Amino acid sequence: MRMVDLIAKKRDGLPLTKDELRYIVQGYVRGDIPDYQMAALAMAIYYQGMSAEETAQLTLAMVESGEQVDLSDIGQFTVDKHSSGGVGDKTTLIVGPLVAACGLPVAKMSGRGLGHTGGTIDKLSAIPGFRVELSQEDFLRQVKQVGIAVIAQSANLVPADKKLYALRDVTATVDSIPLIASSIMSKKIASGAKGIVLDVKYGSGAFMTSVAKAEELAKTMVAIGQNLNRKTVAVLSNMDQPLGNAVGNSLEVLEAIDTLQGNGPPDLQEVCLELAGWMLLLGQKANSLQEAKNLLTSTLTNGQAWEKFLEFVAAQGGEKQVLIEKDLTLAPIRVEFKASRAGYVHRINARQVGISAMLLGAGRETKESPIDYGAGIYLHVKCGDYVQANQPLATLYTSKEEQIEPSLQLLAEAFVIENHPISSPPLISRVVSTV
Ligand code: URA
Image (tube, rainbow, N blue to C red; front, side):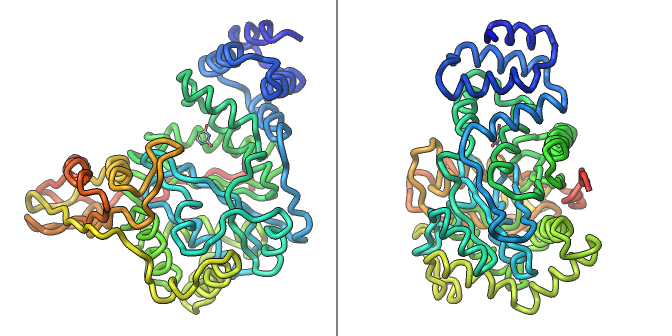
């Protein structure tokens, strides 16, 4: 087999076989296939696309490029959840303990944030003492004893994706549905769960800005799951404005606590119940989505989800007293962003809010940038609300005086206030499922 022939085959729109895709992925990871040939292939895939079978075989070849987690020791069907990224998305902090409290084990590997989007591992790291690295044995032991463990993704998980993603990033080939779908699904499949619930976001703060593109990505990922014997469901959810009110790591942990105590913002609670509901359904802890949501709602109101969160945090070394007292450190400089006029809030551009929070110190511009867990933005209003001129719309938290002006500037662009009322857009558009 020669890589040049395979590039030509894909360039001409012909499908690559399972063996050819294996040859490509293995050769690339070993260093036998150089970056320039892989870049040419990525561009050919970008233009020609891939069939469902090809996308599944590419995913499998990527899974096999590294370590695969074996969760069979847990002795129960496990269900993972993945979000395609966004602003203010703290759903894993809530959904994880919530479903664990309903008897469904959660063995989860998560990532860090980059750019305008946050990451679960950064949010958990905002809890003093919390350890995001556990050995494989400790990880599985904790899932069996506590019902939930969440750790940082191991460096050996899908090395092919790390190398290919870095290449796509500099060759304008990130934005290809089969490449995105295989990248995301390879990590989920290598993490070992038999059921996968995907939260595919669309809107200004999401990877996919249009609902049509998000649906195409969702269908492609669900087809990969179906091909590789994973029960898979994708929920399409709106990320045009930030989810909930808090953006920034410690602020988001505080909002997750409120939600786990049954007092969360309605949009955040709705997305959490939908995702957790599908997880319970895949894990056969309920017979219908409605039955699952009823069980989850009572688990939130009777305190069991909150208790499970405390148990989980303590098991990973986190100081649970800090959570009980809601005593997380927030950045010292507080500035209010005020409404320039009266009217109805029509838009709070999630991407601009995310970038503004990043400038304040809450996120990373590059993979190496340090994070200030106490920095961020708290929104006092959401789309559809009526506001008076000069009313505080958001509070900024930072330690970087010099970033206040640029952040306020971005927020001024992010908020659109008009005279006429507007109803909130639907939060969950549709569900794509193999079950
Ligand atoms: N997230 C991933 O993990 N991979 C992609 O290709 C895009 C987003």
